[in-house]
Length: 154
Picture 1 (cartoon, one colour):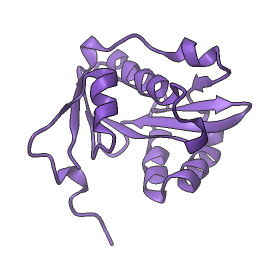
Picture 2 (cartoon, helix red, strand yellow):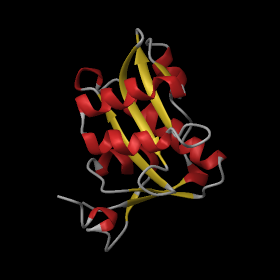
Picture 3 (cartoon, one colour):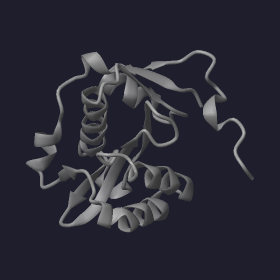
Picture 4 (cartoon, helix red, strand yellow):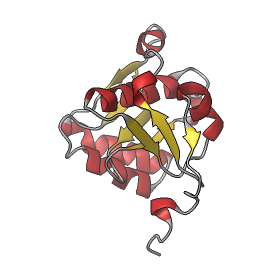
């Protein structure tokens, strides 16, 4: 999987209001919610993603956003986890996909990175490259096939 690069100085407008009209709250989790958030990520995605998100709770402000419907998590987006200046991981529960939640989470996190002074963000080990290219104009970084995840522990 390749890494992608995003220009944070030319992001599209946030989509938070659009999903909030449909009952989805996009917010940063509280420190007291760390266990619930990381458990949800482990259950719906992977232990590795939960571990990366765990790191974001040591950032100020917390470098994760969650999507919540009726007090239940349905998605998340983290940054500054695996490396500084990296966006991800990000995921939306299967039943909540196709409703603009991923786009809203992505833009909220990238705008936060921009406000914190980053000019670019790296999306590491991209899965849905077309989504990132279409939503925020991300481009593939040539020669990044192995990236930082090249030699994981077994």
